[in-house]
Length: 70
Image (cartoon, rainbow, N blue to C red; front, side, top):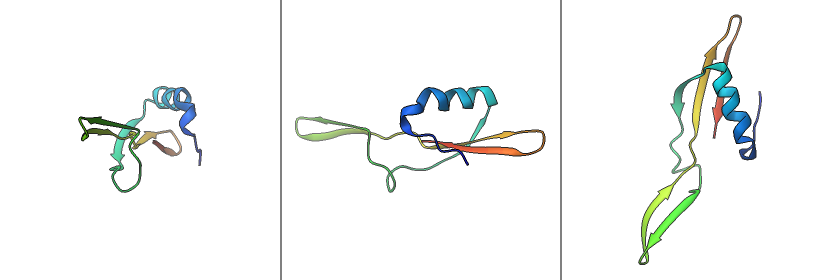
């Protein structure tokens, strides 16, 4: 298992690109994550932006690889 923290975005995206991984799932953020951006206009909530939380897979010769970016 490999765990990559949020500050390693370029490494995570490079791994995904090199492997030509395909997305197969996503975690809906409402119950698990705080918004990374909140927009309020005139005292009213305008929008919430959550981080993406997706699962990817790559079929390899001997074993398959599944990883999560979020």
